[in-house]
Length: 316
Ligand SMILES: N[C@@H](CCC(=O)N[C@@H](CS)C(=O)NCC(=O)O)C(=O)O
Image 1 (cartoon, protein in one colour):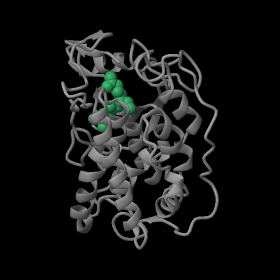
Image 2 (tube, protein in one colour; image 1 turned 30 degrees about the vertical axis):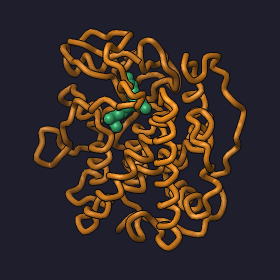
Image 3 (tube, protein in one colour; image 1 turned 180 degrees about the horizontal axis):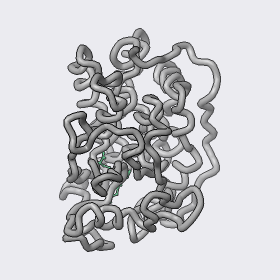
Image 4 (cartoon, helix red, strand yellow; image 1 turned 180 degrees about the vertical axis):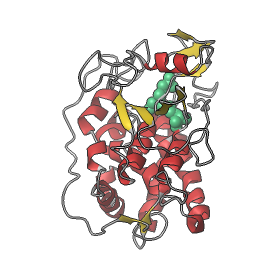
């Protein structure tokens, strides 16, 4: 994927995404406004449009927040095509992958509208503000926090009394799991891969033990921490296991974690955000390093539906 420098999209990013030791490093997010009752980005139904991609786990956070908070009718979405192109994230002219909002063919056009001198990476997810014609944020953690407030003052996904526990989970889930699969899949040395894959499975093992006697990561109700873990779980067996060599165990081999993942899937609105066939197309799209021929595997079949031992809900 390329980068925008002073408002001009460049197909090649001059800054390497891996360190000298072969470790993958993700660039920092650059646009960090907030939707708040204090404005100027007021929480108003119909005001925001989300740019997302089904295959992107960070965009999945935003799609999950929108779904579980029942904001589908208040926030419209454009979905980019699930593949890498020299133009970065792109849209079709019509159909399911068209941009019905601004009518752009590539996401970098949206960033250029936000700021003609924008410098940075062109990432999803981004909420677009129709009123000020600006991107609100390109940091999915912030976007999920904003959506958790459901346009109200109090957050159901980040309740005050649980903030500390949620923060603690978030702090380990991101490096070890969400980004951990990328650190394994994008590693350029054996030692960088070994370190990432071991940390990933140690973290999953710890969560498996925790879920033996806890319905959710923090207590009995679904919080932001669960919704930050879920996108990685949703892609695990179908994509990361094979495409990123995260194959010490499958998610479906963890009894508690797999039950929990399927109980999250059963929450209203969540199943509609999970697209295993699109994940395969995205993660197995042609890549010189990982999949030069771009052949997409047929399996595995992952069975998300069916009864679970736990039934999950959001805090009232
Ligand atoms: N910090 C960002 C990262 C988002 C991100 O890396 N998205 C990927 C897709 S999965 C992307 O758009 N990458 C394009 C690029 O880096 O050029 C967030 O969490 O919102």
